[in-house]
Image (cartoon, rainbow, N blue to C red; front, top):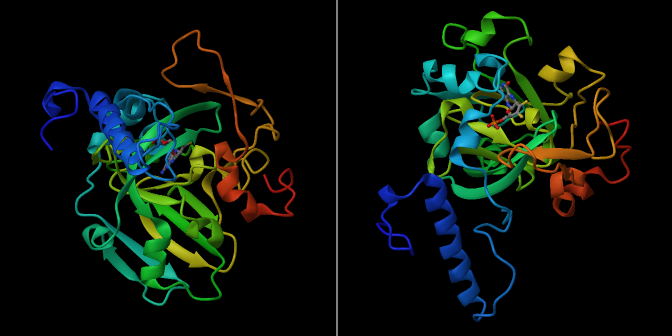
Amino acid sequence: MGRTRAGLTWADVTPEAVYLNRRQMMTGVLALGAGGIAGPTLAASGFSTDEAVNSFEDVTTYNNFYEFGTGKDDPARYADALTTDPWSIEIDGLVDRPGTYGLEDIVAGMDVEERIYRLRCVEGWSMVVPWEGFELNALLNRVGVQPSAKYVAFETLLRPSEMRGQQYGVLEWPYREGLRLDEAMHPLTILATGLYGKPLPNQNGAPIRLVVPWKYGFKSIKSITKITLTEDQPATSWNMVLPREYGFFSNVNPEVDHPRWSQATERRIGGGLFAKRQDTLMFNGYAEEVASLYGGMDLVKNF
Ligand code: MTE
């Protein structure tokens, strides 16, 4: 691919412009496929939003990655210290084929595709990120989930020599997260290995991180080194430190406020100083896909 439709070479345009252009091209192709009828803008994947994506700069300079500090610009400043190659993930617990798998072996044979997802942080800001990744269910199926497994636990790398924030006890390291097995198997749940058509920048969780778009961003654990299938609900980092404020489920829900702030609205990053806050959507706008996972559950109790 040398030229975009606008006749520019890749080198002439910013990643953002390339990105938007590629999406326009795909929209064109899809519209023709449907008989040339002009309809709503179609995105590349059935699961992708057609909302405007945030710039590469927004996505890579405004981050939460406490292993590198608590400031929004700390990850961009300090995450380069992390060695991401070689990388392996230990997969254990209730699986047929436990082991330590090299990243290249994990990714080989996976359908890596683009997924443009909304990301809603529990702090009240949001972005739209063009990820590349594959469905977590593909990896879980490869290692063979045993019938007694009910949850999936994840851990981030523990390496204080390269992750300067791990020298401070803000959280109990390593960072831990978890999903119910049906959430983990849902096709929206991906392991991302890239964004904007490039390998994942370190500040975004290189070389591989979870993305669960209907849950608050802290569930989307970065730089994963361990995945464990369990029968019992695993301990998760934010729930461990502030259980009254951060539940296990942490589904985006505009009707359940955080004890210290409202979750009804959000600030879209990149909108400028005077941009109006926008309404937060149930399950971050993915209700049609995931609401059935929580049928009959009290979402106030199970926050
Ligand atoms: N994963 C680890 N290991 N450590 C973290 O501090 N922060 C979480 C999540 N994953 C975090 C993490 C939070 S609060 C959010 S909002 C998202 O990562 C932010 O992802 P981004 O920086 O790629 O936007």
